[in-house]
Length: 331
Image 1: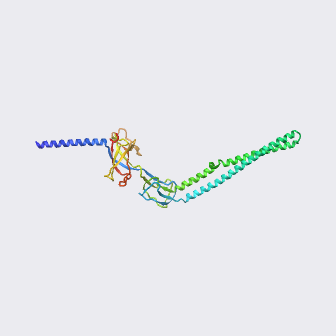
Image 2: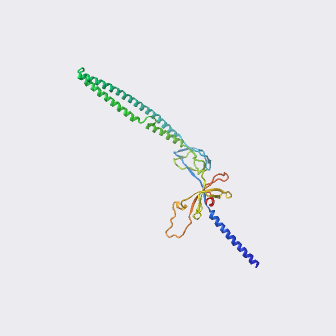
Image 3: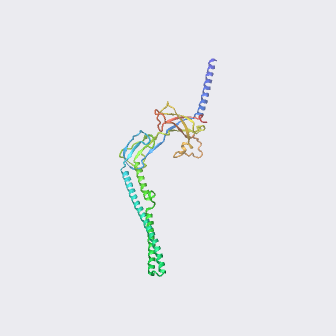
């Protein structure tokens, strides 16, 4: 009898423990959803030159860490320096040409002023002569000559104005506003930019990856040569089941355990939840046939920011990890 009682008590305790454990697990999963379908991510910057040429010097190697602005490699600058010299020489010639045109405009203006003064004097003289002709003090022929001289003076002024207009049209705007000078300066600026592009530097601090570049290699503009994994903005892309998303909110605390560091816990926060499931953005999204009764639980990417503060536990892109969200941290 005693043995039966002990057996009953043991079974009862085991069932109660199982029920309590199951309830605790359910509650834990309810308020602390977890997934191991998660991977470490970071910004990957594709390094590509902006000009074509031959690689002259390399300063880095694969997997090396570099600071922002550190030299990566140089392209032979000879052709670009020659182009800059040519553009600078063209600018000097253009400035001289514009100065010559400015001198022509100044001379044309002086000629207009001279012709205007001549016309004014001729007009006054013609008026006096015609008055004397009316008074019979001068012969009519003298009056005709005066009128002809006035016509010549007017023609000379018209010609001077035409020459001034032509000179001004050739010159255009003066000084730095001159179109020819602006064009020549723009060519110099572009040549300087192209020359600066022969020195490729790190756009941000990070670690070199997929580096196979060699001295003497010919590279093309905008050709991806290698990658730079940026130090900033590391995150975990965790694919949660849609049934776990009910309580997940941006700002909630997250515990992250990366497989390569199983005894270290990274602390992060939820930053965003994808507006669509992972399959929705696939190259070939699935299309369930009409009448398909099989229901598949979808997974939605959740972005979790994690600080990169420990040199002892460096983060690496693609690392598998397990994340647990504390949905009670922000209800």
